[in-house]
Length: 125
Length: 125
DNA sequence: GCAATACCTAACAAAATTGTTAGTAAAGAG
DNA sequence: CTCTTTACTAACAATTTTGTTAGGTATTGC
Image (cartoon, rainbow over all chains, first blue to last red; front, side, top):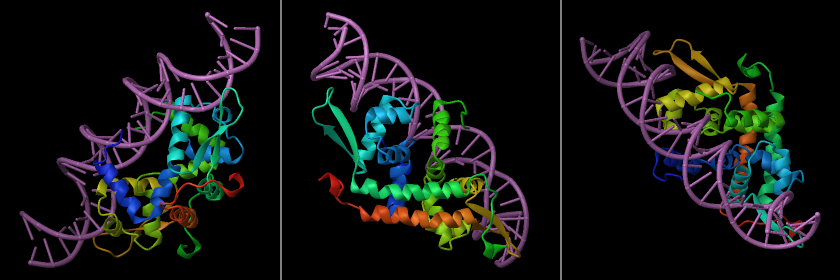
């Protein structure tokens, strides 16, 4: 699905090489991703619980985002024993757990400037 | 250019409503954006300086990303007086300045897990 | 006049992301 | 045997993002 030799891909790789910041932003960039990570950290760690939190998401899209988060090492699928039908739990890895406070900082930053007018820093007034 | 009534747009708005986190991630998500913010914070605050830092970017793309960052209140275009041809400086707003440490945290988080194997947290072992 | 520099923009094309449709398995309930 | 639940997946279509081409303005230096 991805063209490895497109300018877009080449530029992406270039940025990944410049600084880890760019890979990190890439990991959290998908439409539902950061919200999914946050929801799992709050205990909504089953496919159905996530679907309830995100009422507009389709099964296919949720499954795809979860798989990508797994690929990036943010979470792991775990079988829940003795459940019928076989239940799956999504568990944040240490990497995923460490991401949560950063997401909270981003959220705080967003809130701080919600609906405010644009201001230059003091030093430039 | 944007379809306001597409499912994609509606879902985006829904997420913006759930938590500021999603708007915040949206602001830093574009291909070159977080790197541009970081570069400006390091003093590369002219169109040409940014082009040197990001050799693969085209004028059009750089201009577009700068304009979007301006729209989101991250930076401001400032005329540099008495320059020929008329110079423009990109100055981070207070919002932009406050974003930089969050980007640094994201970068640190990325570096911490670079190339490491996936690990569950201690409590799950 | 012609080139170079600095800073863009519109219109378009290519590529990537996101969403939809239609399915799968396995097991318990009725 | 059919319905329901949980947890998906493939193939495709719609939408959005990203990049390209081809320009523009204004000034200095030759």
